[in-house]
Each structure stands twice: as C-alpha cells, then as structure tokens.
Amino acid sequence: MDFFATPVTFIIIALNVIFSFAGFSSQALISKGIGWPYRTRQNGEYYRFISSGFLHADWMHLLFNMFTFFFFGQNIELIFKQAGLGGSIAYIGLYVLGLIVSDLPSYFKHADDAKYRSLGASGAVSAVVFAAVIFNPWQSVYVYGAIKISALLFAVLYILYCVYMGKRAADNVNHDAHLWGALFGLAYTLVLIAVLRPQLFSIIFEMLKRPSLFGT
Image (spheres, rainbow, N blue to C red):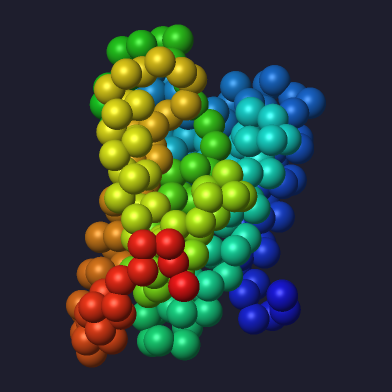
C-alpha cells in the first residue's frame, strides 16, 4: 500500500514497533509506561492510558495487533477521508480515544490493586476493527486464518466471547479492554456518520438487507 494514501496507519504501526522493541530490552521503560491503575490513581500518571497502548508483551503480541491494525486501519483511514467523516483527525481520535476508553473499566476495577498491570494496543485495534464492520458488515473474515465468516457475525461472536472471558478472568488477557474498545469503535463511528454524513446510513441499511453468513 502507498504510505501517502494512509500515512497515519503507517506512523501508528511504526510507533508501536519502536516503543515495543525498546520495551523488550528495557524493564524500566515497561514499568514507566505500562497500564498500572494503582500508580495512575496514586501518582496522577494518566499518561499511562496512552503509553501502555504502544507497548507489548512480546513479538507475537505486537505482530498480531499490528497485522490486524494494518489491514483494517488502512480501510478506515481511507473511508474517513473519502466519505467526509473527519479524515485523519477523526481517525487519530478513534485510535487514541479507543486506547483511553478501553482502559477505563480496568482502571476503575483495579485502582486499588497494586499488582495489576496491562499493556498493548488491543483496545484501539478492536475499535478500528469494529468501525470497519459498519461499512462492510458482510465482508469475509478468516478466524484463525481458516474459518470464513462474515464480519458482522464475527463482531457478535467477539463481543459474546469478551463478555464470557471477562467474567471468567481465567487468563492474563484484558478482555474488558477488547470489549469496550470494540463498543467504543461502533459508537464513535456511528456518531461521526450521524453528525457529518447521515446519508451514509441508507447505504449501510441497504447492505444489511443482503446478509451473508460466511461473508462475500
């Protein structure tokens, strides 16, 4: 893809790679930037809502997030520009606010837990993915690279999975961030459309009338 067509996507990926790579070899950097609700509240370190989203636990964590973001992010950056939905500024807002909003539930839940920490761009990536679902609900999505389903079906299953796993709390994944990032992406994009280009709703509704369980 052309860098100049979707520069924000490439810059965000570059920042994630640079800061994550630095964090792999610097525990001090991780400690300074990781999502840490207890330290955030005690010391007013609210920058952690954003800094934690540019750090990752390992290469696999980074690769999965950035691979997903690369494909969906480019689409949304182009749509926001071409459809008159605020362009790059609105796209940056989706990503940055996605980081913040997705971390708020964990912040309130764990503000008194000095041991709880989280990191990664998953909340913002979820916001971007679910924004993309609005514009092409029946596009094909390959779960685990093999199971073909529609984007809208994926979105429903993803939300149910996040709710279920968030209640179980059986692993070290911040499912609450995934869930609230996804819901924020939907809400943010729908509000943009309603305010800036409400005529797009008729196009979206027409697409919804032609369902495809496995995508097109």
